Image (cartoon, rainbow, N blue to C red):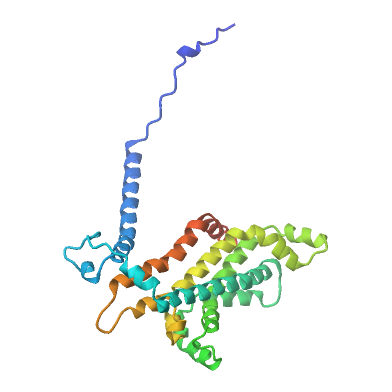
Length: 294
């Protein structure tokens, strides 16, 4: 019999060393990402710092990120002005309505594209995708005439319907791709139990499609919240203006309220930022799942 080796004299494996070439690549990658992050964050930091300055301090030379005259005057002016608060209320009404209606319509349309074969399906798919390729500015004048003719000019309904034209194609494409990743056996099991397709959609598919719904909802809300061109063209009075138009109105004929513009921009970024912070996990999961199969 061979004697067992003494565990004390068994040589431990030498620690693996990272080749210097790989270490250099890793350091270069970290430095590049850090510089890129600083470059991306600098405008936001400057906008945030400028919102706490007076107009004279913003243009002081040499420029300083933080000045002694730190003040909340710009935020106080905005949050105590009923007209500017109405801008935010309008943006919330329009963006939330567009998001909700887009999700409802997109879910039904995507379910039909994913689960059924019908005449003209391929043509409709091409039309839906083609809408994404049309520059929005080319539709500005036709939509203006259409909204005036339908008496929807300067109304919530006009803005909501217009925004849905641009958000629905993306939502349908994303939700169709997401539903295609779900097995059809789920629908068949519901049908065996005697339930209809709407039961399969809303009780089975929708609850397990939360990541896809969140990603589409965040994208839709962001588009409706930040849209400027159609909000400017399809509204006339201040009680219908949205946040992007409210920021533009701070540019007067002879003077610009830069600190208030920066403060209003920061407040306008908060809703989208909160959506990303709270739903980041679902958002990334929905984007990747919806891109797997269309």
